[in-house]
Length: 161
Ligand code: RP5
View 1: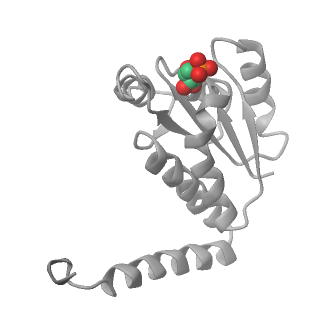
View 2 (view 1 turned 45 degrees about the vertical axis):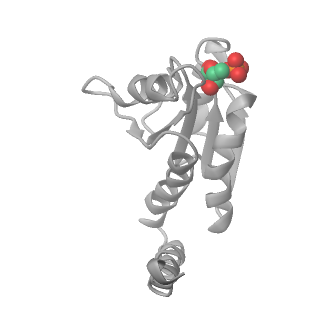
């Protein structure tokens, strides 16, 4: 496994699945696990502490509300941690975003957008990080971006549809 996708609850999976789908697009091996910073703190410590020695290269961590998971994971490992703010019911994910993005200096979390787009881009960014060591993967990412550009350029004038 190259990427660990962790999330605070099974309720985060519909969001975090977009990260997994993106990694699938590029043929990147990943594992998924529910690891809660506040419900299973020891599991979080064990998971993040062992991540590098188990061969993981990047961790994607998604959580909602008071979203400690990405920051705490980053506290236990020097692997890059990408944080996905899951959209909460009460505050629409603003709480999750601010919890994840405002890391104090010295421990970094790369924070993505709230919700599905953020999760997909976390998968994409993980792929781009891994591609710095893999010309084959970099070619796949270049092709993905080219296809995206061509799709936009081939769209009709919206005022004529
Ligand atoms: C967080 O609390 C999880 O990441 C989830 O986004 C949120 C709600 O969890 P559940 O009550 O649905 O388990 O820890």
